[in-house]
Length: 312
Image 1: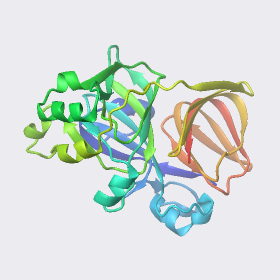
Image 2: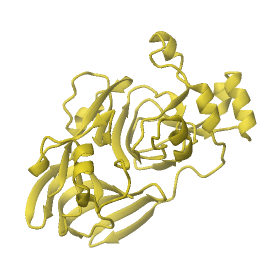
Image 3: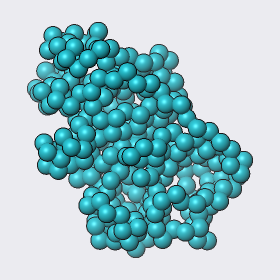
């Protein structure tokens, strides 16, 4: 039986109301993030069905490791969320595993990836810097030379970006993003458009830690995706690395799906249909998130919808 999860909604100073379009019931008009699949202490999703109904994902993970193939990690390793940036997020950076383990009480570092669900005309992200060395980047941060430092990239719906730990980044105003990441909430702000002053330092900067973890690279940021047609369905492999694999499926009709790992994370982005698991039928629609566990052996996706599947 799959684990359907109740999303955790987070109010943000930069958030908006676009998550309503995905079926979420918003308590305020400033919801910036819906944590769809999370066992992190800052947002534990609750199971909505079956024998574990009412339990949080972290509890199920610790008490029933057999559902996840007895995966050896102490903590649930991944997180998915949808981000609605009505205004720009702070410009920030995340540490890698080694730095976070030493300086953030043994937490995971944070590499992440973005699938652009929607973007207003002219919307952009910040990805990396224009500096030719880390020394140069640090000097520009010290001099508050932000206009020259940050690399701005126009984005379109359907694009994909991988953001490894150490990469300065931000989501700009008017962008709706689906995100898969390591299960971490460690963020070091480099610049926040002076909002930390307006909010009495509730959004304080973390520039010293940021400077310690920043990496300056000239990598291609918009990763070329691998697309193939399987049983008349489009399969787009967005990324596969040491942290996660992320695949987008465009379902039209019936797809017999075989899990590539003991458990996978599933989010419905658009449309509606059914998931048939070992003969049991579950109706699904956009905005829903669930985990196929080790017990879910025979899976069929049926209908007309788009989904993203993430796994280790």
